[in-house]
Image: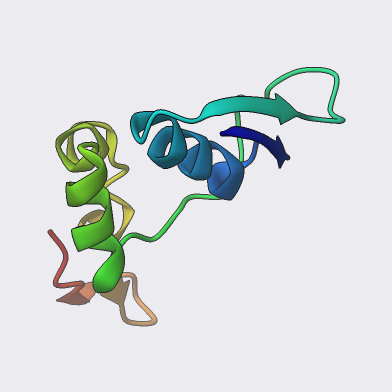
Length: 88
C-alpha cells in the first residue's frame, strides 16, 4: 500500500518505521527546511518501553539516553545535598 505521512517528527518517523517494516511504501512530507538536531527530550516509560522494544529500538534508546534524572539532586538553602533522584 502507498502511504503518505505528514510530518517528520517523532510520531511521523515512528509511523514510517512500523509501516515500512510491514512492507508498505511510505512517502514523508515535512515543511521544515531541514531536520532539527535539537529538541525536547522524550520521556519513555510505561507502555512506551514495550512499544520501543517491539520496534527494535529500545537498546539504541538506552545507549543514547540523557541521564538527567539520575544526575539530579535536591539541596538545602546552604547548597548541601539532602536527597538524590531515584533514576536509572
